Length: 183
Image (cartoon, rainbow, N blue to C red; front, side, top):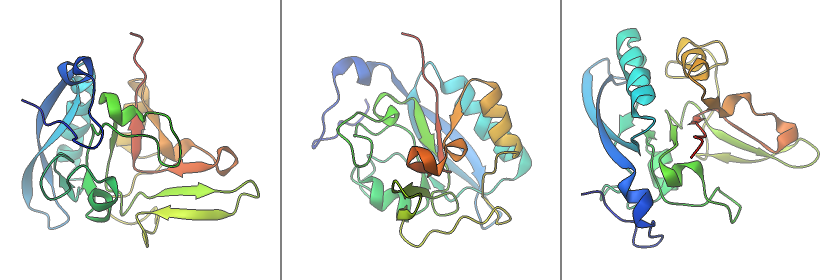
């Protein structure tokens, strides 16, 4: 049974749409690791393809642990600061009152420390970086770029990559993939 966020309980239909995907990946230590990511079952084939391709490429991933784990307690800030890649989290979009696509298991984040979320003001000045101190270096291991094979493969499967967002829109989210399903 999937865990329920006690601070932001999800409706039963959301919980019923989720499944746990077991994944294997190479860490930054070049060692093979196992993890779990919780996603909407309708997008699991795409997410499995992402992790299979990352494994084949030996693309390093920090951690893949559900945010419900005792280590994170549903806290996106703690998870991201720990460079954890995760999917489902019944929560709002940061700084808004709108549900995130993570809240339906239709979004996942990869290597937040290498692929930060950056918020801009109306003058296109950076006003916030998450996780704190994260640097986006296109040449660093574990970093996603617009021409990276993992990004192009996911976009080819109908996913949006937050690294394509522009400062004019108020944010860039290099760690973020999302897919809108027609329900």
